[in-house]
Length: 245
Image (cartoon, rainbow, N blue to C red; front, side):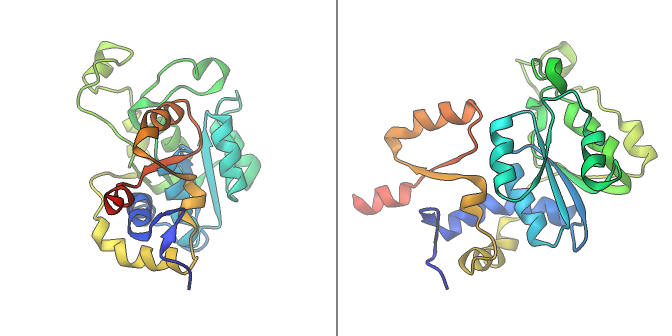
């Protein structure tokens, strides 16, 4: 049995990082043999990808427009789709799976999404992820949405988006009988099981999400680097700070 610490942070705190991704993998029906597409290679997307693998997924594909984050995702054993390129998502999936569809998907990006392709990544496109996932999830598949969508976004690209009115192809999802799963994560429902999985090295969540424990003085640096898109999850271990006081 390993130490009850993951990446320098208590196992219980690692479990909290993991729980939301795990909940979405569960709600979209990931199981042995599943093919899964995860939108977003940030900590949430990586947690969902790790959860899908823990649940038995055969192939987990992570898509992002940030090549640096994709390098990290590939190093963790996941397949990747580079959405900064002009090759559409369904074609990249077909190149990996032999078919342009997956069983289920997770949107770990939310309203801050950008467009795809060389020109698209230069602009915000808040409906891009959901529309793309509806295009690649097979009929009757499920899409989990831990990514944040807000009721108001004053900095949005247009008047409609400022009021959270997005150009989502809902008719496509309806025609394909998709189901969409949102809402809060019941962390305590999974807490013990995930803690055991971490402690017995069934899942190395700190390595997968790129945990770096920082001091309170380093928090501004952490925010700056995270906003720049580094493949890290910065954690300020206040418990250590208080225990030293």
